[in-house]
Length: 157
Length: 92
Image (cartoon, rainbow over all chains, first blue to last red; front, side, top):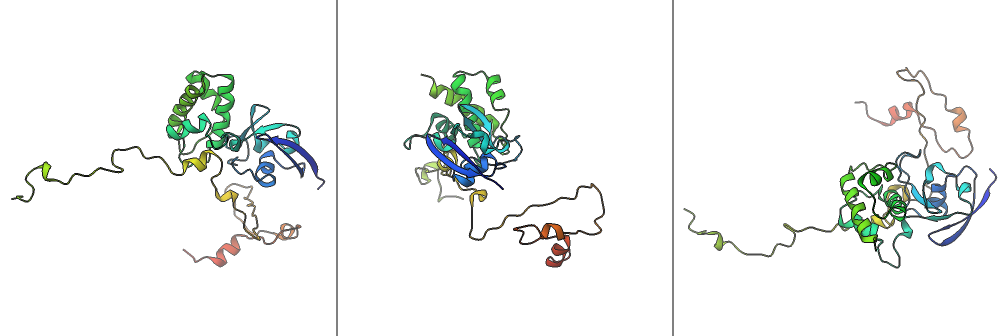
């Protein structure tokens, strides 16, 4: 199958890869770039485990093709902590017990990142709406909502 | 009767290390930074991948499975069917 060149930046690092046009963005992240922090859960866009930020917007990378991200700036879970310092969202998840098995957590955190950037003090409804695209099968939703409240508080100036 | 224990004050006093205290989870730092290793991340030398083809008919009787076309595909190492499973497992 003919390959296409895809150039994109992830967490501020530029990457270039030659991929099959049918390759999904999450497969490119995980298999071509070795960024395995972004997870594949349902493979059809309902669980949200593969969520990353593309040019600031939360996208589900299992239902996107890698070629569609050509030229884009991505941010994944690996880009949250800076110089060993955890991001307030990560700190909040640890403190509020917002994770159990941790498989869904990267996707949740990226969705929360998008939410809190646009809405620093979200209402309960706004939080639930923003997290509607993510599923946690350890059923830790209450702790996740607490984590969002705590993260929002930490991030407000 | 219990003259060896006269009152609670006679019980030994310790400083509990774990009881009644919140314990931080040791696995969290790896999980929240994307560094935790899940099975899907593991690549072993010579590792193969499998795809499962489910029967497209609900409540049907399988009379035979013809895997010849699948087996002939480029890169296919093995095709396994219920007959193989039967051969390799003990009858219940």
